[in-house]
Amino acid sequence: MSRLTTSGQPLPGGMLAAVSADMPAITNSRVVRLADVSQLVRPRIALMVLVTVFAAIWLTAQPVGMSGISWLAVAGVLVGTALVAASSSIANQILERDSDRLMARTASRPVAAGRLSVSRAWLVTVLSLLVGAAVVWGFGGPAAMLAAVATWVLYVAVYTPLKQRTPLNTAVGAVAGGLPVAIGWFAADGPARLAAGDMVGGLAVAALGTVLYLWQFPHFMAIAWLYRRQYAAAGLQMLTVVDPSGLRAAGQALAAALAMVPVSLVLAVPSASTRLFLTAAVASIVYAGASAWFAFRRDDRSARLLLLTSLGVLLVLMSAAVTFGGPAVLGQT
Image (cartoon, rainbow, N blue to C red; front, top):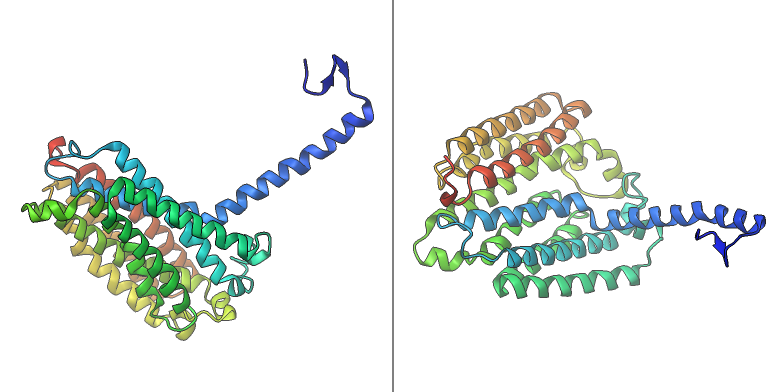
């Protein structure tokens, strides 16, 4: 029997027309809700955080492999981290709702646009943080939970307010971006491994965290350049607003990209993987080249190129670290 029939008889034409007319509205409402959820949790940023945590767990497991680590525990840590990351994203949008309304790129966010009330947003924020922290604790231990909460505090309570006060906000935000490495390291029992004399995983994770810290400067300077007028209108103290010439932003981007070249090579030292060494070398040199081009040109085209390059480089480095720099038991070279 069709869902559009009752007692085996067709619905009257008027009722059928009414049902058909309501269907697009229902569909559009669901699409809007899904779009709002996506804007609130920012899945691409959350995915980057989760990949970072997993890579840290994977690299910490050297040289004995993942045999001593439960995959269920790994999944639990990732789920908990995802909830904490979602909470930090929502809290950021609550605190920045006034400035978000002044920028075209953020004016449609649910809290800024008024589709989600501040009180409900805070409720979701607190619940996500508490549940996420509890899940990380349950599967990764108290140290991993403290690292997750510290990342949340640094991002929400320090980085977010600093955006309206000083261009140093990028340096603070970069720390928050690299800190999820600590979640994975603690979850994989990194301190105990280090105390037992296992320097391999610790060195790899330290290199990974440093790479992630340095990677963020060219990435965010490119964004700051592309949206400098919107940032200025919203009163955000980005480096491209304080220095409209872009010289300081370009200098920081280039300096960080150049520093990333030797640091990325350290990723390959613990595993002695030639493939990881070559991949890291090529990726970091390409990144430095794009940063140099932006420093020379300082225009929208070079900034977009740098932004796209940054995403590609991060994907390549993280994939190579997991594929070629993993536990030696897998026999990579």
